[in-house]
Image 1 (tube, rainbow, N blue to C red):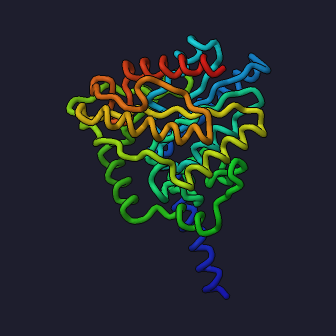
Image 2: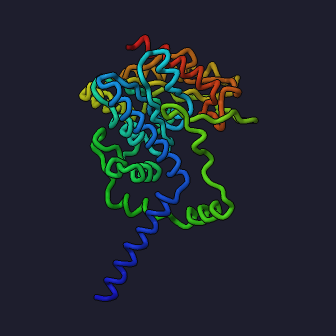
Image 3: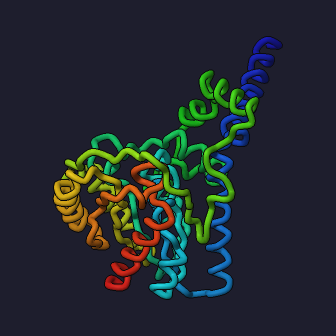
Length: 314
């Protein structure tokens, strides 16, 4: 009995330490948790100061976080806006739910999910991802890590047991970064107005290849249909906006043709915000540290285009 009790206590302590290492000591989680906190505070403040006023919320992967400037959206539409973009590794279900959870009747939710999530099989798994689980736990919404009430999904026991273990490679990397004083690549200085993230342009950024996907997967079609239905029940207008991606100049036209076909596929399920670029751009000077992250100049152009499209829908 004493041995069994000792093993039980040891196991509980081990998972407690593991949870601290993966959630509280994780620089990436700490950064994004701060981003989430600031966004939720802004929404709460808007609700208090302007009761009954609709809010435009944008959600998607980091391409959304680095591309949509709420200040520009608000200036051009007259409606307050908040950028709810998080790492795409959070998974589509959590990305949409954590924004849908904040909506009220009359709001607008713009879904800016990366096309790869919608066109590649297996990208919209119903189980929570490690990143989504950790951010949900750190921000106080652990039960919603798999998609919560929006998709009627919650993490199971196996998820808790799996994601609270830091693993050897993570522990070694964390220890190494701590020893040399190196943290996460983004910090407080990168957090702008309304949850928008800003990063300067990078030299020698390699563009992505040609986009070849033209159709939604069956799981993506069902996913978007669910988002549209839940939004309708909540009195929330849902729209889709395709993120821009840096593309090789000789692949821009082909990629745009394919993205146009994909947007037509999306429009069969959810209204689409139509922009001339069709999610494709060939100018590196508009991008930051990845082919999906826009810098300030790029985000200004993208946000202005989205605002123009929004005005036609509202």
